[in-house]
Image (cartoon, rainbow, N blue to C red; front, side, top):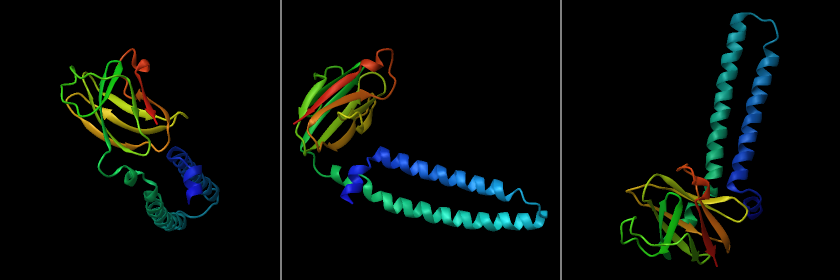
Length: 193
């Protein structure tokens, strides 16, 4: 099982699952096209279609239920539960990130922080994320360019995001919500020791 989790990231698993589902749909369409070429009376064809539709629906429901129960154990929620070891306050603004350790005891306009922080690996970190102007998206990417976690940064509201960095390295914070002309330059850095 450990081998499967290392081979499949969440993105790869979703891609493979989507490909298999698309292949099944294509196979059903090809089957319907091939079988519809034969001449037969309308009543007989209608009976076959309704019979096949019922069986297809039943198989599809069973596959979806089996897929849901199988894939639910891959969800990462258990690793991010518990009391956080460290609190990082994050304020998004056009076009920068302000991050600092500790609770946010000021309003976002007065909050002082930098666009680079350092956190320990293996510890549960809670990010308290808000915005001082427009909607932003606090997205953390690893060194391979894979998104590892994200949440919305909204003015007047604080989202709490728990995350455990398993591997040391440099992680980049990008905004996934288009927020204006310099959106692409809105980059922060998280150093994980």
